[in-house]
Length: 385
Image 1 (spheres, rainbow, N blue to C red):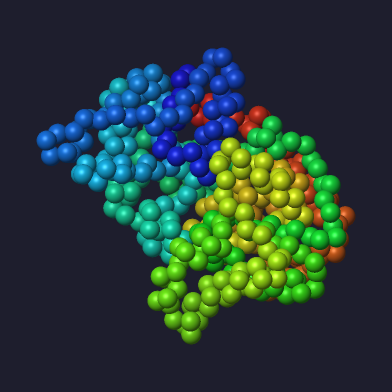
Image 2 (tube, one colour):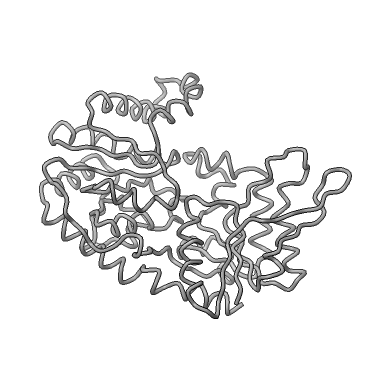
């Protein structure tokens, strides 16, 4: 079987949902996988795309369209957003099987129910992206996704759940050799997690007064935040209660920088993500999540990545973490000040508990989410088309 992952990206979910799948399937001589975005097209006199071509399309048995396709940057091509739609339909004409791979609840985004996720709304809540995704949903032969909650929001009868997995060849063995005299607390995520960070802001501020902790924000730079939202902040009413969390967050970032107890680590190339995550040497990993309708369709990948790095986890007691973390593999807490404060303090003061939770979570992930033991589920899903 020849499988083509038709993608336009090499960041974020690309690694988990495509790259490591390619790696393991290609080890089986009877199957072959390609990942590329090499698509050409024909346009008419009005600069409208009328046909698409791709060598990989002729080559493959199964084409996997991953997530969304960004339109061409050349705005003179009027129908550039239709490239993936035409690609899907060309595949069907050639009797290729088409799979749509999706790991986010775009329906909720389109309905405007995830306004806290500002960058995602800006990117996806547009007619051209919606047209793409509606086509992918309805005209694909199969949809693959990450969780049962998200499957129920798609087209359940033709959707298969393939949970996010970990490549332990990249992460290595369990290793809890961490200094406990100065605790490193890790918080990771991009700009869309600002409201989630609000949950842990006050507990961390209080704990930083009581313990020699270092707070690591992995995934965004404070200078980038300030630049990105400079104009936005100038227009915001500081007295509006709805805006207080954002101003509090930035006030805290500025104060923490002055105190020297906070570190910002930018996103890195996807090939370096695991190495960088391990190199941070975090003692505790925090995963705050509001628990919105959009959040309920997320996967537990952050918990799995922290676990593979031997980092004990404290997470919000909301789906997906409440479905996957037990009292033996982590700490779940309600999104209240004292719940988070007490949970973090508990691990700061109890290295043995932190190590036990980290080891149990590592073993659970190794047992249930090791890609070397699970990649054949992808093969089975494609073979059954």
